[in-house]
Length: 253
Image 1 (cartoon, rainbow, N blue to C red):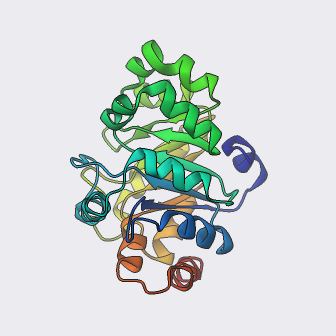
Image 2: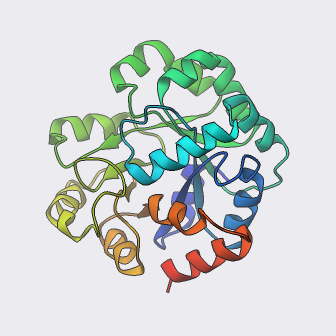
């Protein structure tokens, strides 16, 4: 199912779970995809570990560090995706230098071959994407998902809305992921986004870790993205399937 079809089909709040590939163990990715699909998560965001993740807070930085020490590489991530039978909608999130080193067209081709629907690259500006890479992404049917923050101007948000093809990722606060508790302080910002009546669905991420946070986020947007809280929950897991189900049950409770 494409991301566009997912947003057209489901009117319920959508739940997107982020995890770092190669964490907690180097071969965890296929099991996590299967477990999240069985737990009826709507989509997953697969983090490409990077040594200098500017947008990420300490929890995701820590998981990236462990994944890199475990030996994860982009090539290995694609190999693990090839071995996965999961059909859950999948997004990849990383930093552009990793993609550039892998070669952009090869990256997009491998994403297409492995059922990846969209890509988030926070350090690749829209204008450079349009000028140099949009044709390649479109050739391989990949949505380029852009971020907005409380500091993003209305003019910029409307430009991002015009050029988005699946959803817009609304960062709930300035700063990095998982550094604040709750997203209720973002109410004015989320109300402002909702009042703009954008054509593109909006998902909100950063600082969502409880059922209350998820419900609050979904009040103004199509759903929530959870990363740090899930990563903390599975860091010392002895049974990824069981612990994943437990976490998703808690968030949906």
